[in-house]
Image (cartoon, rainbow, N blue to C red; front, side):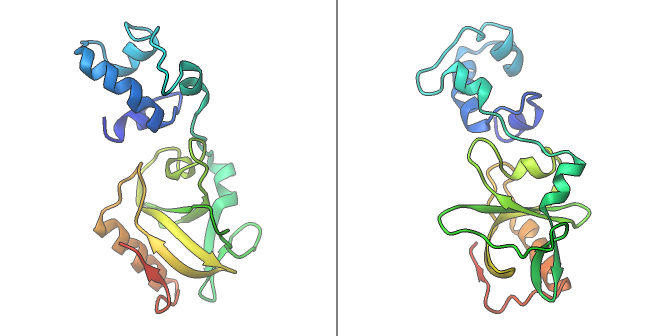
Length: 180
């Protein structure tokens, strides 16, 4: 199934949950396309203990529209990451995951990951990215970055693009922990 199922599901259901049903569909050797099978075909009555039909239908990923996305847009001012709209520095909270995507037009978005609700695909509504991953920042100062996204599966090349973006924007990377 890879990442394509989450991208083409018009209901934006959480990919982790879809995998449980996908496995059943795959083993059934049905000739019905997966989403057809799941929603209206032979699999429509299946309700799994490990992920109920109710959970599958209700746990959906939020996709941001262009206006909503602006809240998460981050710019670099004096080497610090700052939210463009609010002018507040990016300050990640310990014990939670903070994620970023760099759009193909080199716009950076940062927000807190919420499992099954808000993840990398949320920022650009599942659209293409240049890079994606996780980060830690204190008062706008970047402390650590990881090239991790279950949705986009960034390559080393994608991550290098993010490093180039940061350098071009005068972010001092000498004290940034890079986790590859």
